Image (cartoon, rainbow, N blue to C red; front, side, top):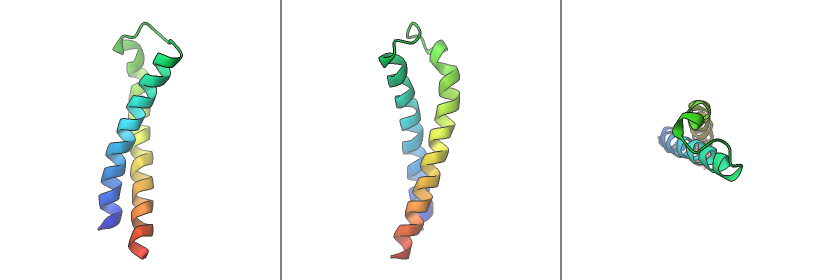
Length: 68
């Protein structure tokens, strides 16, 4: 049960990190005018990548937690 539960939590948190990190990088580096049209192509890459990485890490952590 732990691997799948933590995988779902990892997907949600990874997606949030993917979106927030992208927006922070664009704001910090002053890229674009701040409209969502300029950030959207990058968000379409970072959202699924963050969700996939978070899900994978959550599943691995859950497997390790289930062993102990």
